[in-house]
Amino acid sequence: MADSEPAVVETAETPAPTAQTVPSAPDAAATLKEAMAANDRARVAAQKERDQYAKDLEAARSELAKHEQANMSELEKAQRERDEAKAEAAKAKADAERIRLETKYRYAVEALAGEPLPSEEALARLNEKLKPTAAAVETEAPPIIPNPAKDRGTESRPQSASDLIRLIDERAPAEHPHWYNR
Image 1 (cartoon, rainbow, N blue to C red):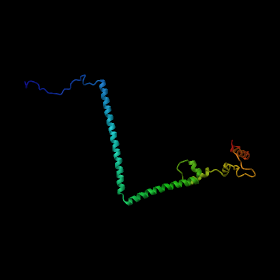
Image 2: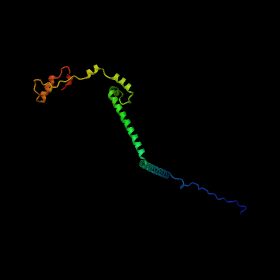
Image 3: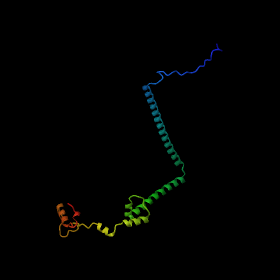
Image 4: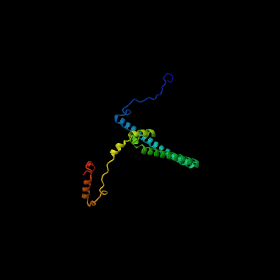
């Protein structure tokens, strides 16, 4: 029988799909939800791990800076302090120069309104163009308003507020009624 019978080869046959192996629609939705939840948990865990690594890195950097500061020689410390002082002095010098230019070329600096200032020559030219003329300055200056306290003369000092108002009304210039509005 062994010679005439064909050899039986055992193969792993996959069973035909049955109702039990094919997931139904509710089972597929539940499986998908479980997979999404697992992905979310993995993502959150990775974010926590990344945040922990960032904290550890910052702590290591600060510890390294402490060690470097402790191991720094006196010469290196003095050099670093010197460099910081030079930078601070340069900033103060630049601020002082800007203030000097702002006071000297007021009209030009106002026209530039916060922009970087050009050279001093350019500021001088711009300031001359923008500077009001002497006649314009005279017309802009308000005339002197009479002061009742100084111009007493023979009159007595006002005793009440109504007396003071009457005195001001009498002395107010007629050509400029807008100076004193009631």
